Length: 91
Image 1 (cartoon, rainbow, N blue to C red):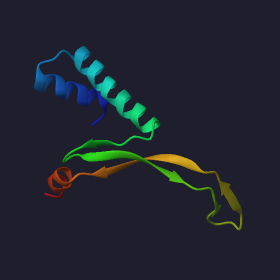
Image 2: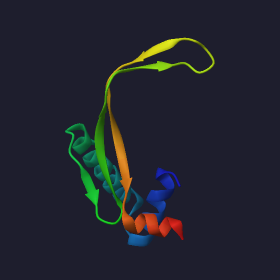
Image 3: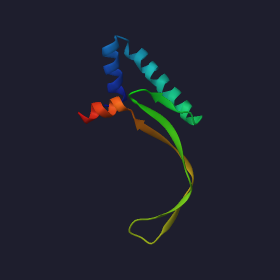
Image 4: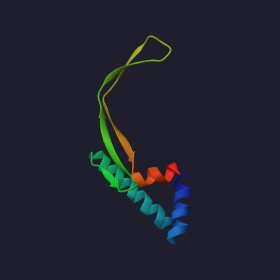
């Protein structure tokens, strides 16, 4: 499912217009993004938790060669699956 298909499905379920559904979804995604930029955690009980993690700089090997590559430090987004979602997917 892509973003357009999600908007269609939510619009059909809620009775909201596709434009209102799209605006709402984009607002939610923007708020999640802004929270992660501020290094906050976003939790949806039963669904999952969005967070960030710091990765230190390191030296990595390039597969198939003898070269080393310096990988800079970075911050990455993480998602931990909640119990209800994990159980629903496992069925």
